Structures are given as C-alpha cells and as structure tokens.
Length: 130
Image (cartoon, rainbow, N blue to C red; front, top):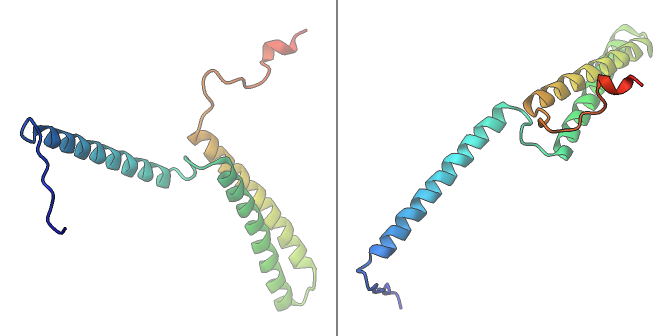
C-alpha cells in the first residue's frame, strides 16, 4: 500500500507534464496577483475595504478622538482642581478633532475610489433652470 502507483499514458507521460506545467504557471500567476493586491491595499488604507469596514473605521476614529479629549480634560481637571471646565472644553476639542478626522478619512477614501464615469451624481446645474 505504501508503494506509489504508476499510471501509464498512451503518449508516454507528456500530457501529465503539460498539465503540471500549466498548473504551476497558473499558481505562480495567482500568487503574484495576490501579493500585488496586498501591497496596494496596505499602502492605500481602505482601498479594498467593504462598506461595513469603512463605517467601522470612521466611527472608531470619531469616538476615539472624543474619548482622548475627555481623558486629557479629566486628567487636567484633577491636576488643576477646575472640576468640570477643562474636561468640557477638551471634550468639545475632541469632538471637533473627531469631525476633522472623519472628513479627512472620507476624502481619502473618495480619492482612492473615484465614482464611475457613467454614475448618476445627482442633478446638474442645468436642471435647476426651470
């Protein structure tokens, strides 16, 4: 049972060699295509991300900025004894920072994935003239 089974082809094994070389070339092509796509998506940020992944990234960045602002304000309030005031100011600064981060990330995503040429982008300026 441990002995390898030999198969005999009518053409002397040339067919199996061509199938093997074809398979090897297809595997090499798939590997090079996958490694090229991996490098592009790693450098491009969310180039190949799904809609859910993009939304999770934006929400996480927004909430993180607010929490960092509130945390810095809380620590500053403890240090200076100005109970809620520095935390409130830093909370608002964190909110503004979060909004700016989301705007920057969305602009980056839009630049990486432009709209198709035949996409309907809404009414044009000519449509407003009635």
